[in-house]
Image (cartoon, rainbow, N blue to C red; front, side):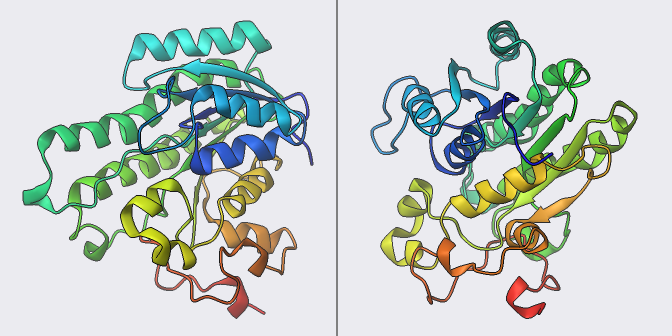
Length: 283
């Protein structure tokens, strides 16, 4: 399969950033895209709502559906999934993109923030996956793609921000377990993670223009997601992928086009295994 035309793709946290970029990429194939996010009204610091995301989806060539949903709330998730199925007739793909972040150490992480990260990241990933599985079983090439890091368990990934790392690796564990659990159903569960920082509004808030120049654009993650989601779900599952590795395998050799500032030294993202070399070093 090389296209997601007429496939129904559910994406959490798709009102902005990487989630929106993935929505626009699959929409370019003519996919049906259900945008699940909390943002019904504009955020004072962050751009985008479910409604502006749907406008972007339709401008890209897809069919959009705005679904206001807090993935921490089971009833809202039940209602959202039912709405998508009623509107589009089923679900072919789920992208677990919604995530909360706080790069704070143990003593400076309020328990309210701890709860938020765990409720959205690992619990939300588990919950939305659980609610979509029964519908995915009826799809021709069902995929669940989660924006989660490789399972490279080292203390250096936890020491600076134990709470956040626990929450992100919880998402990775969903991939590990569900890939095996639903293998007989033909549902692929894979993880995707960027090798470098990605220029999103969140990056601007954390590090400003200087950090943005050391990042790649969200389109690299979106293109890698598309490459994964168009693979045979029975042959490609349980994988922890880095964006540029996926694209290199798909034949991409020019990665400068994805850089915010071509030629700039890129900021290596956290959780990327030390022994995983970038495609430029692989010949």
